[in-house]
Image (cartoon, rainbow, N blue to C red; front, side, top):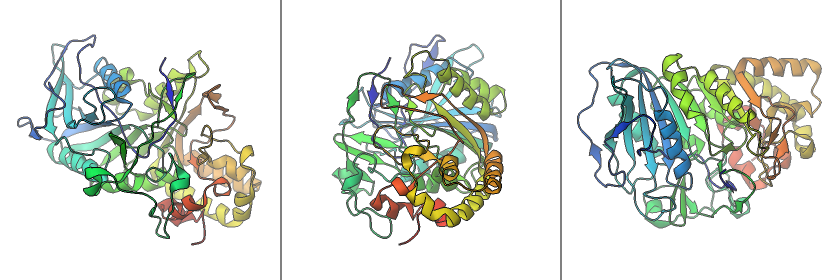
Length: 456
């Protein structure tokens, strides 16, 4: 049973393991992940396009190192693609600490190809290494990784899994200390300081605050974070969206990270991929069931709905009340615009009620005082929209949300809550929001479309 951390970070961080100890023997060519020798480890460019490339973005230069290493080892024990040139392939971009808790030493991120030989061995083949000073939780680095994958592993389509710390749509550092932020009219924080030599290179940096330990539950994952000494480098959802190359046919993006499952994130990524799988709440550090993921991806035609079902069933079967904690949904990005049109009409009509509603009556997806995530449908239901309007909203949600499920409670006994309704999308509630966050929220594509938060 792992301990629980308060969530602190902002969009995006995972860690990936490549060590021995699997049931199936394998060879690992990434012998020293901390070596500072950037470049390509040999010529491995395919002579023809692949059918499908599955890429894990493991941005784990943080306290999730061991949990993310476990995830990849679990994946190695499941179904992996073979070495056939036109088959599906699996790649992992990993940035982890040299050792657990060592945030001061530089460690080189690497891109690894995982496959199984005809004899059953698992090979972890390092194809590119980045310099040790690289901040992986940045739009610049993610763009470089995706461009490299698109160029060197051309495929009919791609799938991405991002595992890390995250705080959904929130700006870098806001979750940790919201009252220290002062946003300008352009949504940029004048209160965010720049720290260290990485910040001087243009990366978004905020002071790192160690999350307090909570002894009665498992560790949670909180979209990208690199921790270096006492400084945190974070990527916001718009940075991630902008990093996705034009013309890269991404069928799905899976977020193994906390609080990403909101309409704000879905709207920012609706033109970047076909489907989004994410959680409205925090995600326990165990994350998705990685042992069965390869079967779903490589043997079942990229069955992302099946991956979501596995996720829910894994946690719903837990007997410990804290461990029986999960929310998950799968969104059809082609239907997000339609939902936005419906919501805009309702926001315009019920704006005053949305601002005045009793937040305690709304289904929440957060613990403690981090009140930035509520159920989208429940907000409007509690505003007493008409039956006709509710039917129109439900029709749009049904078309948009392919799959949604939730356990009866989340983190019971650990500042948790009951889940009595779950539409599959969270949303900001400006009536119980933050005056400074409102300024940032107005800059989000979702708010530009719907004017949930109006004014200047």
